[in-house]
Amino acid sequence: MIEVYADSMGAFRIIQISDTHLGHDRRWFVPNFEAMRAIIASRRPDLVVNTGDISLDGAGSEDDLAFARRCHDGLPVPWRAVPGNHDLGDNPWSPGLGQPIDNERLARYRRHFGEDSWILEAGGWVLVGVNAQLLGSGLAAEIDQRIRLATLPSRAAGRPVALFIHKPLFDRSPDETAVTHRYVPPEQRARLGELFRGADLRLVASGHVHQHRRHREGGVEHFWGPSTAFVIPDRRQPAIGYKRVGYIEYTLFPSHVVAMTVEAPELTNHDLDEFMPAEGQISDAARRVLA
Ligand SMILES: [Fe+2]
Ligand SMILES: [Fe+2]
Image (cartoon, rainbow, N blue to C red; front, side, top):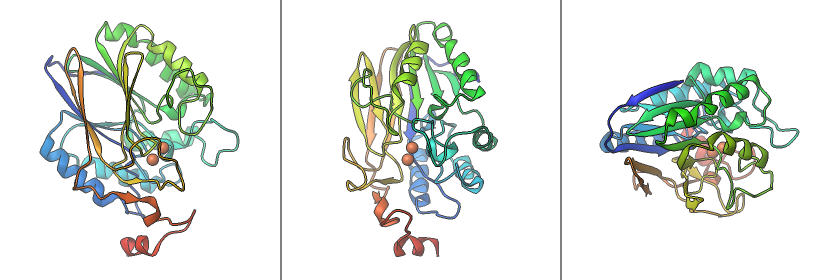
């Protein structure tokens, strides 16, 4: 989908939320989403983008996707989303994944959230949402996405481009060769790089890690959006960025972007262990939330 979102050449403000993990039955992170909605109502950005893991387990439960969609319908400004592994399954970075992306999961996501990749024109910029979970899947939709992205350099016609994608492209360098759950796999990263060649990519905003980081590589600013829901304890996940819940507000000017990462006091800095102290176990505190 390609649409002109705003024809203003002035500043365009975006709030990036991520990893909201909204569950129909396990509503642990709904209070943080409600707090985020109030923040959005007061900040009034032009657009909200959720960079994925919108739902707690949309890959396994349609109820979670439907519930997460209803939550987003309550946002007071326009919004867009890109899917994460929790929403429609993971990209096949390793054999034997428990929840790989497939056509059924993709169709279910689209039923509730519409297009899983998109191109918008806004404030003199071109905004691109990419479904990272499709990369390397071999699904027909992966080819469709590639064809759409191939039009980007000519569509952008020299305007700056911002990419929104669930998984970060890499840890420290685009030349990394490790294949992990955390980043876009090297082969797919290279193919994506080819598609963006000829476009003036300035900004990559991702989620997935539940840690915030900002780094500049080859003239591109990479922002890892914090989760608005919870952080993952060090015993489960090493700290490679900043572990606090929050959001990022971007102001896009025709020549540059200003970004502000916000650790909002209205958001509770949940630790996953509050709810799941051991793999698959649900804590008494979590049960009380559900009661
Ligand atoms: Fe997540
Ligand atoms: Fe994720």
